Amino acid sequence: MGCFYCDEHHEGREAIMYKVGEMEAGVLYLFKDQAHKGRCALALKNHRKELCECGPEELAAFARDLARASGAVKELWGCDKINLGSFGDTNPHLHFHIVPKYEG
Image (cartoon, rainbow, N blue to C red):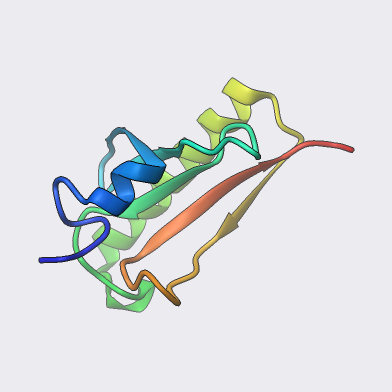
């Protein structure tokens, strides 16, 4: 397929991320570069480009996954704040970056 997140073994993804595990609607990945300790990405299991392409159940499940994953990151790494970002400029598969922020 050639999709960064859909391909079971995507060379580019495996070079920069570890697969943490599958969730209800998404798959959680941990970035190998931990400049922001705990930085992850949550990708939707189904190939979609935009949130508006998701049905109500899929959207709710993905939101639950995002809340659970960001809560786990906050608990595990003790960060002060979690920033969430979805940027599809170079990777058009729906995913959110989970970026812990630390005071100072």
